[in-house]
Length: 498
Image (cartoon, rainbow, N blue to C red; front, side, top):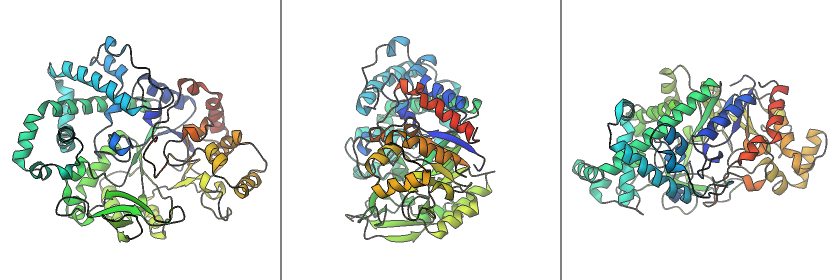
């Protein structure tokens, strides 16, 4: 990624759609065509894994590291493929245009999914469905019964299920598998539809010479099929509840650290199994995307583990992780590892050494670049190397405009004025930051769509540490025709990134 190229960060759920949530339908294809017309090389998205209301609909807290998010299945594409009739989708509810109402979308699409499944189950599934389930048998069977069991024991995490099915006794799996066979079949069908639609969109990206950058969270949600099916790969107690959980220690941003609550890996068990689970996870992710951002990359070198009964992240400890051994194994059996390392926050030299060893580019975020000694700040535009991927901001930050209006001190503002050689209003700061990113030495520049459009704090995607109102922002259809789109295209060419 050291060639001068650029791209746009926009998650699938943020696309326009008449069906309440961005999906894999016509608007996604139009967006791909728009990116290609703008001279972009990359479309960066967030994780494609399943989401659920109990985790705030966060794509980083999923019930599976392998399955797809079926809520982004396109109703229009289901009609085209013959799974629904045009009448089925003729009169959708009046969904809000600029935000996702997840519950309303789920209620509506569940009705469509039931109709499609009824038609599908009444005929021969056909070769493509059978081939899909056979090719993905290593995860889809466990995932489908897990989904059915979560509905059967609604309100309970898997660790509170009856012991026989919690512990996956074969007779219990057989009994529940028989009882819930229709729901299991339906979930496999939906995963097949997701895979079919995503692969078609991915092929369209390839035809337009556009690469997709995905995202892989390092940690797994406790209430997930991955932990239920592989408890030995995580540090659990005798009741199969987390004994140790993940987080980060206190720092300048949080006096008590961050207590994430995810179970941490039992790396010894992964090592004994030859990192087979990780190999499968990486391969599955790279079957869906061209490149992958590894979230919290430091955790592959050292991770902060906290007793599960901890109230804050203060009383944890650093533990070594076998990242070098894992990536050495992965690199030996693959022609390349198309990885971007998320190396934000306090990063120790051993992390950078491992990134350099494997040739993984890191991240630089321009809104972090105007603090402290700017001459040495690694996020300042002039300090960004060609091996880095530069961002104006990320999904976890405010938009550039929102940041400048609400979070920047007078001293910082004056520093930005001096650095850029002039003064400007908040309405133009996003243009400045896009130009600073584009003109920097960074090989790759990724700009969130919110910054291209010059949107404020109302368009923020996520506020870490909060559980409501996140992941909801959507582009309105008319914004896709904003003059800012053409301006971004011109800047891309001006600074040699087409």
